[in-house]
Image (cartoon, rainbow, N blue to C red; front, side, top):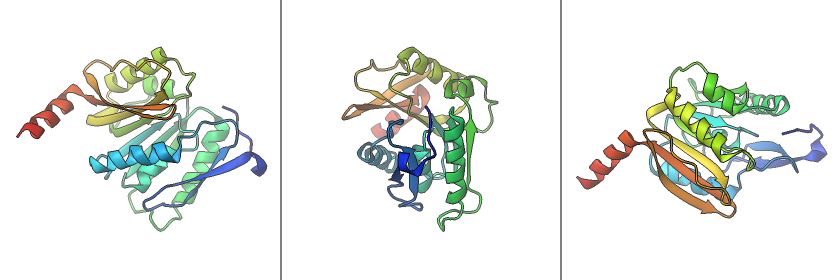
Length: 215
């Protein structure tokens, strides 16, 4: 993904709601496929309704502008790591995160940083630390399904996702649904125009949720 710094080549998205509501997020006019506000609002309203954002540690892969991760921070998440392979894009995200700290909604103890790396390499090589409660994955539509499945396997097998964590993956509706990694299940699929949004949880987590719903 190539980025142009000319203001004439940029368009601006905004954080939809929360403590950073209205914050502008710059994105190239023709070279990115940002998640639409309709899809973003539907996704995050659902995550909020299930209590998955509050104080969460969030990983945003294929960050682009960092819009998904920053929306999560705005709606209650406490820590964010954005992974982006383009050096120029990563620099722009870093500038956005610096600006974020000047907002009144920024709280002591919050954290946000960008990692300049390919998402696949990060999933396969990053040193496991405190696992993420929520992983947001928005690869280019051209990203192969087999590569998506390998990415999911690396994230879960290497302990980058918390035991009761959630993975959200965006894909084209024209591609086959990705297989869940071992020990995980796909619990939901929602289509928004050309975008399919898949949600994954561990089998252990899903079993607990089912048992609680039956009580």
